[in-house]
Length: 86
Image 1 (cartoon, rainbow, N blue to C red):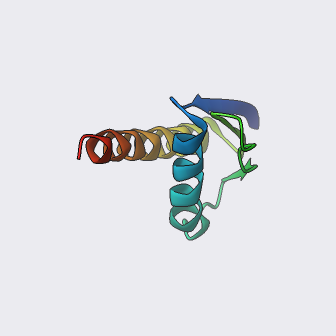
Image 2 (image 1 turned 90 degrees about the horizontal axis):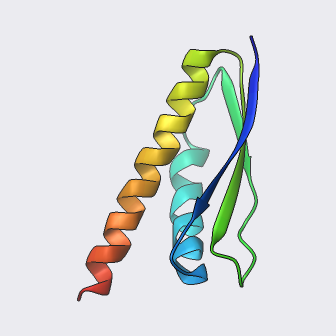
């Protein structure tokens, strides 16, 4: 079974989306994904949304990819929140 979907993250501001994108690429470009692939385009300068296109060979690989994206987004969100309080 192959699974393809799109997932979108909406941030509080275009700046936060840019921070996520800049943080995300180095981290996930080195990730070894054998049964799933993803594509992401840089957010437009006025957009606070980032769209991912995910293609997986099976449900387990799909879930692992989604979980990784969500966990990383959560870490970046918390970091942005902490640094904005300084």
